[in-house]
Image (cartoon, rainbow, N blue to C red):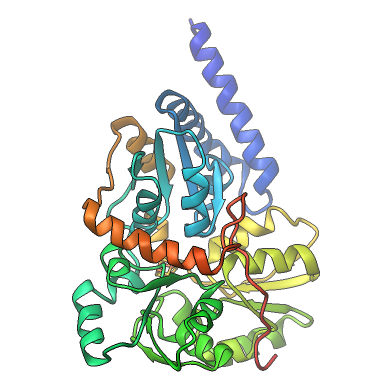
Length: 354
Ligand code: SF4
């Protein structure tokens, strides 16, 4: 005979499946929602027990983003939003550098990275020793580092930036040359927008570098009237074909403000799924690419992280202080970069050729 507790769990699972399906159909079937629901219920229980919050990056699978996330968005905004909570434990549904950023901002909290293998081709492209060598080659030239880097690389930098505020940060330095690390395509975009000469590193996002101008022209011909929004980590020929270039947060704001009836987000696949759930009246068409690192995050490994309180992210305090200083210099310049709600703000920028 089923106990009252078992009956309660069964009802909670049924309710979670129904809620997921209401939010994510037709992109996710009822059977898929029913398979995810027991994990959703277990994670919600564990969050209460552990006084935990789950941060979900925009590229997380929809069952994570819409099923268990307390805070959603870009990595830096998520880190600052988490710091404002009274949670004791922060689970980062994102890649390792994002968990490090959360730890930098909340050193007193337990920060968990459910799968330590969740890396990033950009973060892996450069080391702290590389930054020191560049400084020696270019004495006196300031170093601006994209937040998609390790804490050790941030610690060697003068100032950090996001894809949303990179132009503002570079311009704010008031110098003719800047070392910009590590994304070469983002750097090319920022150089064109800012008029500042940038010394670039040949790092690339393995997701965004796969888009091309030819692909987008073919795609546009196949989907008449589509509005094409691209992330500045894409190659220049892809950006030249876009109607709008912006960070993930800027793309979401653009969709909300402009409501294009047919739209394509030229970025990681799950972002389209997650944004589309909030705009059922719009048609999201998608040439997109999956990030294998982001896809290492699953409901089972989030549940496991909460059960075992592992894998904990730790950063050596002196290094953390230097890395945090680079982030805080960015925030001092872009004082509105993180709003009270934590969402990064930046002026939208049109692609040079659209
Ligand atoms: S999408 Fe690109 S930048 Fe983001 S984690 Fe994956 S490889 Fe790194």
